[in-house]
Each structure stands twice: as C-alpha cells, then as structure tokens.
Image (cartoon, rainbow over all chains, first blue to last red; front, side, top):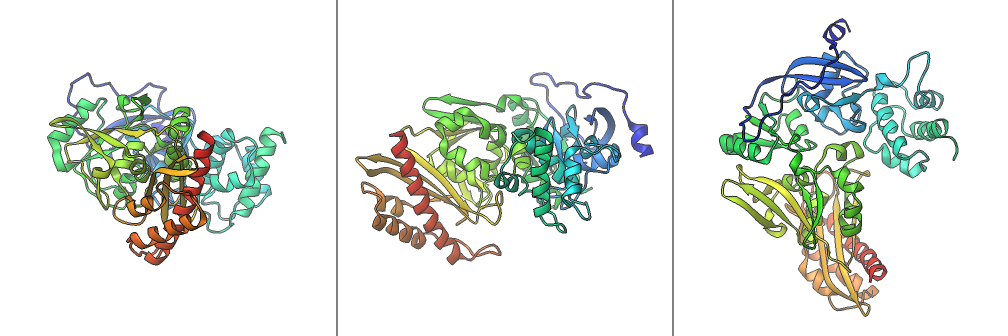
Length: 186
Length: 289
C-alpha cells in the first residue's frame, strides 16, 4: 500500500492535452494517466498495455478488485466507470485517463458495512470471497437501475459473474434483501 | 502484463484515425469497445503493432433517424442503443437483440459498430442487420462508401473491410408496419448464442408478406434462408405452414458441430426458433397493423 499511497496524486485534472484538428497522433508505448478512484486521483506513467485492473491493483494499491479469468467471462474484476459497470480487465488504463472509477473499497468499512455487504454476510452470499467484489459492484449498479427487482431480474443481472463455491442461491437472496434494506419494501 | 506489447494511439477524430490506419496498414488494429479485442489481446491470440483506439472519437457516438433508417454511429455503446427510445420505437428487432449481447458490464463498453466489424458468427447484431437489410458506412483512402449487410459479412470474423478502412456508421432500415422478433438459445443469459433467429413479417388480410428470416450461430456468417421465407410468403401462418418453415430451415442450414452443440442440435433448434420468432413477429405485426 505504501507504493500506492506514495503515488497518490495531488488532485489534478486530466493529463491529456487534446490534439488539434488534423494533427497526427503518434503511437506511444508509455503514457501518463490520471484516474480518479473512489475520489482520489492516482497518477502514474504506465505501459500502454497495462489493463485498468492492473492499474487499480498495482498502481493504486487497491487490491479489493480481483482478477479471475482476465478475458471478460468471470466478472470478478467488475468496477464502475463513470457510474456504469465494466470489466476492468477488458480496458486499458490509458483509456480510463480522466475517468472516475468506483471499486469495492468505496462500499463500506469492516466496522460499518454497506447494506449490500451486510446482506451478503447475512445470507451466506460468499465463502472464499474471491468473486465477491465483482458481485457487489455488479449488484450495486443493478440495484440503482432496479430498486425493486424480481428474482428473475436478479438472476439475469448476475449471469455475467461466476461463483465457484457458494453457488448462487445465497447471492440471489442477498441481493433481494439488500434491495429491501436500501430501498424499502415499496 | 497480459496483453503483448503494442504501441497505442488515441485519435480524437475520424480523420486522425484514418490517417493512422493509412500510415500503419495491416500492422494497425482498431480498438472499439474492446469486449472482443481485449480478450484476444489478453490471451495473446492477436499481436497488433499499433492499437488505434476510437474511444476518444466523439463524432462516432450518435443515434439518429435518417431517411427511413436509423443511423447509429460506430462507437455508440450497446447500452446506449439499448436505452434509446428511438431504437425501441423504430427498431424493435434491435431492441429485442441488444439485451442478449453479453452482460450489462459488457454492453457498457461494447459498441454497435464494433460488434458488426468483429463479425463473430454467433453474435446477435450481424444477424439483426442482415434481417433488416441494413448496411454499413465505411470510410477509407478512396472516400466513403456504403456496403449492404449481405455483402459485408464474408466469413468467420472476416468482413469486406480493408485494413485502411474504418466502419463509421451502421444503418438499420425501420420497416414500418412490420412485426419483428429475435430469439436465441444460449447456455446462460448473455452467452453467445448456440443459435439465434431473427424474423420480420408484414400481415395483409392475415397473410404473411415480406418475410425475412435470418440466423446466427449456424455458419461462418449470419444467413438468411430464402426457401423458408418463400414457404410462408403470401400464406397464413397456420400450424402446417409453421411446420414446413421448421423443416425447411433445418434442411437448408449447414451449421458446424463444436464443443457447445452438434450440427444436428443446431439445425433442430434453428427450426424451432424460426417458427417461434415468426409467430411472435406475426403477433406484433397484428398489433402495429
């Protein structure tokens, strides 16, 4: 975490200077990026092939975002990009330059869990916990759009996230309960 | 680091992107939403010298009605199209298919143009474009040209695009008065279709007209089955006619077997989906007519 903290940026705007019309853009191998993650701007010069997931974990030191398959199937690395869920393994860090990222670290603290985290705990929505950050971020975005979801909607919403130990029943129940905790019975 | 080394350029206009593609030719690869290309990079199945990222090209993000068609900028996110009232109103077939493309986090990034240009033989949007007789607008060194869907998809992941070309717009004709439906069978919601079927039909005095049936997941490109369309044309969709459609579709398609499904299974499912999609399309045609 020390490295990540040391690299924490003084709050600063976009690193990119817009290229003028007709100006040729020459390809580069390394580039400086500034990404706001959970409200803090992290700046670093990275290899352009660095994924956003590796930037979040390696440069920002936020290791709550997990990497499972690294080709978009398992959903473990799901984060919010400007409020919308994305696979952080399927984006380059340079593409997130100037963007706002929300990771699982933003949700709650061990002392004061987010209602979604409480619901996962109460409904045994996790065992090993590896897939959990992805489920939480997917569910967070889903519940914003569907505050009172049906079970079928929940199952469809998490179809892109794989859990290999708990199974999905507890997770589905946790998300349904979280909806009630967050938005009332309505 | 998962992806192989490459150099990266993020143009902010189509002109800049075209200049890069001209300069680097086959060495360059266009990055749109990245939901297919990034996995290929992470698995090191592709090793482009230069990645030309279109995500800062704002001029390619739009949905507008134009001359009886809906013109969608190549970099329009699938999620944006899914939420578009214009798409729901004028392109119900596309609205049917979009929620089946991957999962919400995939559609947040995935683009309409990227899905068409990638031309995965199991993808939904190419079949929709073919069923609606749509086209793509391509810009290249020789200028701008339009390519009909029927000529665009050449083979597995292969299109009529040259390395210096950029797909800038996808055009879906609206077909007012027609009913449409898209259905698929996949292992889980959001997976690539084992088979998908798109149907379009008009009804006049209860008889089917202008029938189109297009399929995905049953060959190297999306396909229409003219014989099955002809089997319904001008007739009422009676159980006997529907059964004939099912039979003709299963007989005419030549899908491959793979680890996901056998050719026989795909043929059978394609026939059943064709019948169901046609029925739903006819129901909807009754509602709009």
